[in-house]
Length: 448
Ligand code: ADP
Image (cartoon, rainbow, N blue to C red; front, side, top):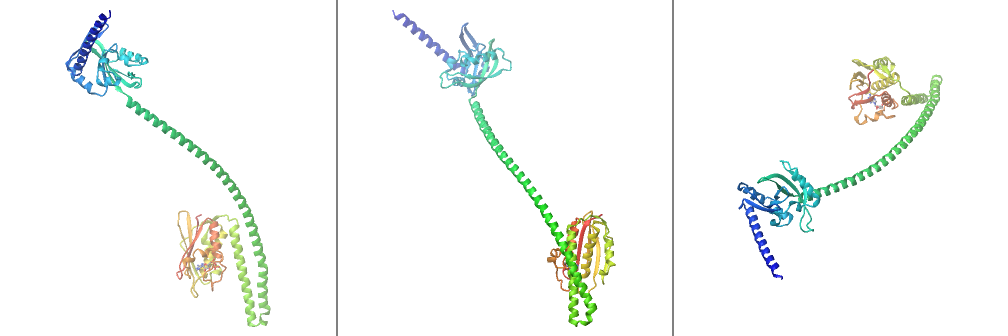
């Protein structure tokens, strides 16, 4: 009862084995270019496809390349595939040939292939698919399918090149990760910078408010200081002024004493009385100079066009000139100055030039002008006097600074008045001098 089916199966098995062997031989032959035709059994019976021998080199090339390569019929039947494609889908070639290419795609991607095959342009088409593989663990293989239309023996077919996208996708993934990490770092940095900016702004706000407080305090202190300076000046002025009255009395009475009772005094008494009168006079001079310095320091000094030559000429014709030669060399430009202050300044310089000569020498003074910068005028007073060590050129402009004063009368305030007065008129002063070679004092002011 059981025998006939066994016999039938044996023969079936034999038949199948024979067909398998034949198929393997055929594939081997095709792959090595030994056959030029292929029989495919389908629902409409066996179909024969010839392969031109001219194509043999291409077949060999296709076997050698690192992409999956297939030839499929319009309905998806695989006519041919290379080793690489078999490795991609992890199936033996003999199982692939004759099967449907659709079976290697997940069901949701099959429509895309259908559309490609239907509307295939002569230039071909490209699409990304995931190739299914037998075992679940291996997962799908991402590939790019390039499809080119073919005609094989009058039947519509297509050549397919399947490129493995695993590496590309991995690199894209790495790149995406890197980008994300980078973006994260940028976000963190931005947050840090924003925070730091916030802190900085807070500090700036604090600083601004401190600066405002400070400015307010400085303004208050300055106002208070100005008040005290004003009242001190007023105080000094009053004291200096009041001191002059007893001084005048001292010198007046001493002179009267000498005039009326001089003959009654012994020689030494007369000498003492003269010394008292001289000291009172010097003290009066000192107080006048101090008052002048104080006025120059604090008074309003309106400026106007002033002629320095006229001031020098006035001095030349004054008794202070004594036995001296003073000449104006060239012309002196008019300057913007306060006439009273400029007169005092030039008078002080000229008196010093007359005064500080070696004993027995006749003072020779030259007044001339220079133009150090456009719009500025320098008026120079040059003498043939005793000169000044450069070491002291700055000091002599300070109040009460006197050098080698023995034998030369003075209070040590004249040059301080010169400097303060010129500075208050927007100018500057200086001196070029060395001992025994005379001095050249200059003042610089804006031209009128
Ligand atoms: P004073 O003339 O009353 O002594 P100044 O302030 O005018 O005071 O001058 C300060 C010092 O500078 C003088 O004592 C003198 O030593 C020196 N000095 C000023 N002018 C000259 C000059 N033309 N030649 C030499 N020395 C001078």
